[in-house]
Image (tube, rainbow, N blue to C red; front, side, top):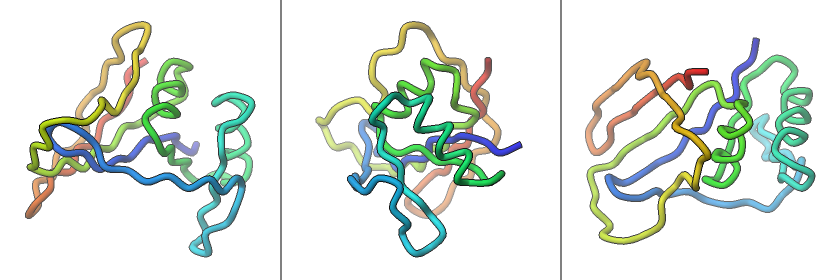
Length: 121
C-alpha cells in the first residue's frame, strides 16, 4: 500500500520550505499538487486516488500537523542542516497529544543529516 509522508528541509532550529498555490496541477515531472480546501482528509484521499498506488508527499507545517492529528501520516522525513537561524517559527503547529516517531534511518552527509521516521499509531 502507498504511504503518506511529510519531507522537509530544516535547520537545527527552524525549517526551509516552499509554497506553490497550484491545485491539482502537474509539475511536468509526474508530480501533481493539491491544495487543501475542504480538509486534509479530502485532499489526501484525492491525492491517493491520483497517485494510483504511489506514495503521497505533504508540504507545509500546517498540512502535516493536520494530517498528524488525523492519523494520516505514515512517515516523517527531515533533512536537517547544521545552521542556527536564531529565529523563525516552529515547523509543526500545536498537536492535541504527543506523536511518537520511530527512527528508521539516519544518514549523515556533507552539510546535511537525513532523518527518516515512521509515525507510530
